[in-house]
Structure formats: structure tokens, C-alpha cells
Length: 509
Image (cartoon, rainbow, N blue to C red; front, side, top):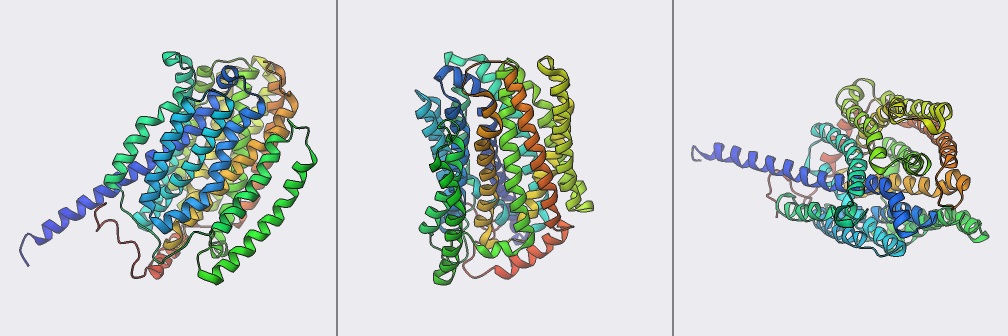
């Protein structure tokens, strides 16, 4: 062996290590783009409503349509990554997302915008599951806490940047395009993500051959559509009988889905959803929390934006600036929760987050009643900071809790389920706004107190959901740190010949 072998090996290892952190930066940027796209749209809704003459149902579909397509495709997207390669699906997803963003930006009417948002959500469903899956297979268990902490900070940064970018781009009215630049801004980011992703992300897939479960895809998608579509469209159509029949049939479709997945496991071992994941207590409980948390955020962010702009008559810029304390609080609390609090206090941190967020919502209700139409941005800061701290204590450690004991070969499926339940909850929350918010207002294009009153009514629903979340969290492990060790053992046990190679040792293709 020559004397320069060890230094050369060390240099190659350092280069490979740098490449994986660059790969992390690429996938985090894609996750950031998706997060920004959700929040940036909310702040521009009043401008879209005025420019396109969209009904409240169309406005709901601009937001809920994205969430529904996202939720419906996430499990499939995660499984496709397991089968065909996470890098390949990530690049396909980010390319499609960029194209869909262009179509949103040039939409000529509400129908085209809703269709483009559906496509955008479907492409995000291919892209986003690969983010957590790539992190899961790229970084060892002892580093994932730090990485998920960074992910929590990205969530907070996305929450900060989205409303501000949306507000600024809408106010500036660049080239007379009004709200359209909020979508067109994705083009340079998406193109850069494709080029850098090709260079730095290492390919990985499940260690054993899998097949796509098309029947499972159809049943899962059908169940989601049968629940969300009647909720979103029902009020505008006078709550017809077919809507209630569709929603009532959802449990039967879901039962058929579970039965078929069990059959698929016995037949060829390639189900859409790996049902064995739900035997892991931390995963099952975390999924339940993710679903209910998505409902709360789906309701809050839409009605909050409409209350400020349609109710109080504020500009998009003022509404965006008002949300900054919330976003900063989320980002700071997310970092602290993973790095400092969860290792010491375990699930109590997440439960404290649920109660803190509920307390912030109650404070917001009180302020809205006390100050009414005269409420100022600075007066909203206190409840928003309290809510932001609560949300930050939940979002970052929850991801770690759900994935902590998941075997490596099911990383894509598990991350798809995590995102699916969150987005399903979000779509449910947006659909429920027909009941808890728009039902108080009607479809009139007017500004005024009814938006503020409807906002208070919707917030009581958010409080109720947060209390449900607090209760469900008792099923989470007391200490998540122990779960990481178990996950490491599971990862070691499931490594097989033909498994994805260690990304540190193999250069990206």
C-alpha cells in the first residue's frame, strides 16, 4: 500500500461528505419551494378573486385542489421513489412542478388556474416524499436529529418568506402581472434545482424489487376525492344528497383499500402502503397527530388571510408583515425543540406545543372580540407569537418521532404517508371552511364585519382540534431518543445485498 493511500481516501471521503450536504441543500430548497408556494398563494387570494371574478368555491379549489392532488399522489410518489429511484422521481417531480408553476402564472381564468394547481399538486407529490426519503437513507441516525431540526427551520423560513413574497409581488404588480409573479418566481428556482439535483443527489431505491400497486392507488385516491369534493363543493350546491352519500361511503372504500393491501402483501409483497408500519406505535400515533394538525392549519391560514384582507380591508403587504412574528416564532421554537428540549423532555414538548398553540388561538379570539374592526397589526403579534411557538414545538420533532423506528427499505413509503396525512388533513380543513367559515358569509364579494365574525367562529374549531391533538399525543413514545437507537438496529437488520449503497462512498450519477 502506498503512503498516500490514507490521505487520498480521507480526501475522497471529505468530498463525498460535502456532496451529501450539497444534496441536502438541493432537496431542502425544493421543500422550501413547496412550502412557500402554499403560503404565497394564501396571501394573494383576494387579488385573484378580484382579477378573475372567482367564486368562493373556486377560491377554495385553488388552495384545496392543490392539497387534494398532493395528498392523493403522495403515497404513490413515495412508493415510486422506492421502486424506480428517489433521485429520478425527485427530478421528474421538480421539473413538472416548475412547468405547472408556469401554467399557473399564465392562467386565463379560474378554471385554468384550478387545473394548473391540480397539476402542481400532483407534481409536488412526486417531489416532496423523496426529500425525507433521501435524508433518511443519506444520513445515519445520530445525524438525523440535526437534519430534521434544519427541516423545521426551513418550515419556519418558508412560513416567513411565503406571505412576504406574496405580499410584495402582489403589491409591486410587476409588469402589470398583478398576482401572477407568485407562481412565475418558481421557474428559476426549479431550473436550478433540476441542474444541481442531477449533479449532487445520489440515487437510492428499495433493496428488493417492488411493483406499483395500481388498484391501491385507485382506491386510496377515490376515498380522498369522495371526502374532499363534497365538502368543498357542497355549500355552493345546497348540500345535495349525493354529497352525503359520497362521504358516507368513504369508510367502505377505505376498508376495501385495507383488505386489498393485505391481499397484495400475501400475493407479491408490493403493497402501496406497508401496513406493518402501523404496528410501530410511534409511527401510528404520529400519523394521527399529523392528520389532525393538518386540519387545524388548513382552517386557520385560509380564514386568517381572508379576515385581514376581505374583512379588515388591509393590503396584501400589511397582511404579510403582520404574519412575520408568527413565522419567526415557528422557526426559533422548531430549532430549540429538536436540539434542546425533546432530548430532555420527550413527548411533553409536543404536548406543550399543542396547549400553547391552543392558548394562542384563545388569545386571538379574545382580542378579535375586544378590538373588533379596530384591531391593529401590533395587537395581533402576541397571539401570533404564542401560536408560532406552539407550532414550532410540534412540527420539527414530530417528523423525527414518526420516522424514528421506520426500516430503511420503507423510507419512501413512510415519508409518503407522513406527507399524505398532513396534506389530507390540510385539504379536509380547507374543505371544512365551507361549514365553519363561508357558511357565515355567503358568496357576496363584500368587505366587512361578517368576515371577522366568521373568523372567530372558525378559531373555536381550531382550539377543539388542538385539544384532540394533545390527547392523541399520549400515544407517542415518552422519550424519542430511545426510538432512534431502535431505528438504527432496524436499519442494520434490513440491509441486504443489492440495497442502496452508502451515499458517502458512491459519487452521484
